[in-house]
Image (cartoon, rainbow, N blue to C red; front, side, top):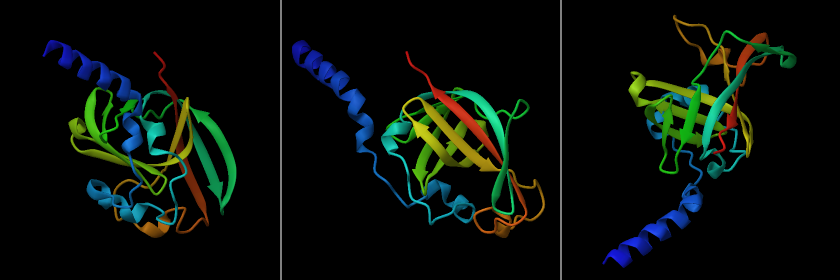
Length: 173
């Protein structure tokens, strides 16, 4: 019995790097359906789901400015900080700054829900993903008052739109 348990344990260890290969694309936002009006549903996933399943450390924040549909500026800022770390797991669970949560990648957006943060949920467009770099972005919208989907860049690029770009690097052990 001990030998069988040992073989099962070794087999599980050997299969762990392949665990994220079971992830499939989905258009069902499920717990993140509240974001459906804020997401450009014409986008498709540009990256593999498996590529997210790592531990990521925050590196820098940039502001991206668009005027009338044209990118006019990208600059580093040091006064906006997102979660300092993420660990995305193959079972759609995650850890952000030691808070457990859920994640989803759909419509080229990364959705996260940190259960331990009082219900904070976020939707980020994935701007870049390589084996060692993750760049996510979100549009800076007015706080409070009535939200109008027509304010979103993908609905109306006219006027001035500002995005926060958060860059993460993969933790390598």
